[in-house]
Length: 312
Image (cartoon, rainbow, N blue to C red; front, side, top):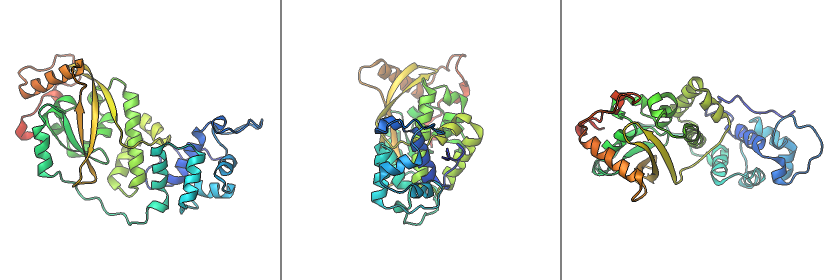
């Protein structure tokens, strides 16, 4: 009988390869890969193990051992065959290779406390017309400018341990209410975190973050168990801001050459759009906040913009 998979709350460092294969096998419609209906009752959704083995030209026993974690070393040709059989998207294919031992020859290094280069901080402070921040791969907020604080939240008012965009998305009501489509944004966050967990299974801080969110939020627990993955890509987000109303912004993600584990994230609006006008107003207000938000805002104290000298 097919094993439907590990509990949805499984954390990095377990049988990621087997869990991912089971999840993707269960998500694939047999008709999509051209398999005929043989009339047999399917105890679980998606492909049977023998069907995956047939499509990938490997033995059923080999698929069983992979899914149970009894075999982890997989050749690149076999990984390619499994990825083709499961019709994996590019991000999913990259994740499959990341969690297989074929790409994990180098020993894991302990994570060091990340520092933001002074030159990058200077760039952030100079971006007066663009909200921007520096994130690491876990989406910890390492540095930000005045615009990012005005758009998203007063990061300086948060303990360092809580300055994480995924944690805020799930556990902070004021931040959560910013999203016009919170479920979509939250699922994207989980997919990004799952991709990073596959690339860095020894990251203790990431494991702790996943563990906390798994325990505290049932939606995270469910979406984490789906094994959806996503790498960086061009995207836009729509916010319902307590000061400027609804705005749709493009999210630019730029790598930092001197710090490969960091990225500069900037929020821009399409030229001559209502969102651009709204963003311009917010940035002007944040430079001279002579008035406070109306009483209907979610948490007024979190939207008071701090002086420039206090921005980390």
